[in-house]
Figure 1 (cartoon, rainbow, N blue to C red):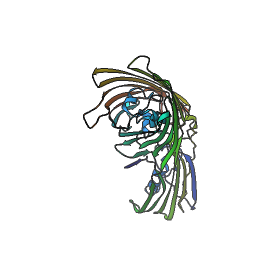
Figure 2: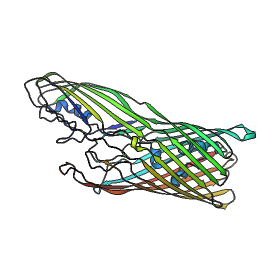
Figure 3: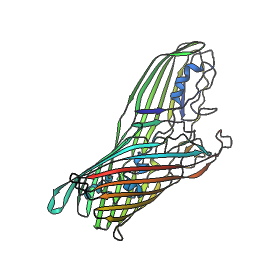
Figure 4: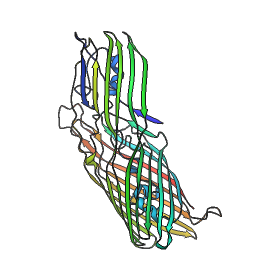
Length: 477
């Protein structure tokens, strides 16, 4: 299911003596006085209402995949996703594809994640949607040259949201909304990779794939009278392209108790361009037209370089740390570019043009830490206790101008546990495991004030918490 949402705007005209075509170019703004993309007037409002809806769809839709927010695989999510040097199961596709070369068996896993968003604007609950999705993963190792221990492994992960394949909601850039959580976590995502390794060293590479949406055009033919309007025809063309970007990584393990990892994820950018043509028949207008073009970068994930270390300082204890550089400064301006052409014949609309300044994002460095302690309460049984912490600064600069992209520095605390059995009967003779995790994402409170004292947006503050829980089962063959 595809879900799209937008906001309403007002486009009108005032009676004039000469028919004219008017062109408006604007960056997305919030409907109101003196705001971009708004043509003010009193008549005929109903006729142009549908055109206005398309004209003010004016914000960025999604940034990064849901796995970037929560991680992948409950074992790793419980350890702060600090797994660049550790992922040796089906989560290797996301954290570091080279890790798949260290898998000893065919590994299949399936799990479920649910996140409860509790984000607030001025102390009131925000309308950000909760998160839910199912995950699957597979690793298939193959020994291709036994004397050297040379192994080739295939790995794939998949996250499938439980409400829709993807969610695209474009909001005016001047409307306060939680930029990183509005659509980011509601999107199908998958990684596919190959890894080649010998004992102590592995390299891997592949692609990350995400679903996207784009539209080529909308056509309306509208008739109206003094009391109401009716739509004669409406046509829409929508497509669902696939966006692909390369991923790569390596792991070096000089000893069994120490590993170093390095991974890279290339940026993904998807843009949508929608042209809306409305033929208008209304009072004083026999054959008018409105042409609206909206171009927007609906998806962007920045280049990301991660370095990690995993070590076992003593038996049954694993410590992890990761450092990730996120090049958000390459993020395109999230505001939509809108062009409106109005040909109203005898109506001469008043044009308001007001550009919102481009938003320049900041590069960030994310720190991740994790730990796992393993107990053996019975023969053939292992119980693992896990914990982690993430500090993720926001790339969104102070919102002192016309935009209101709400985001702040984030702290993530995670806990989890796992149970592994060496075998489960005569059929499942390899280890079987069950893993669970919980995360608490805490967004620091931030106060926003505008440089312009005449700004229609008063000072406001925001903060929030996201609670996530998940469970997965893993089989080895």
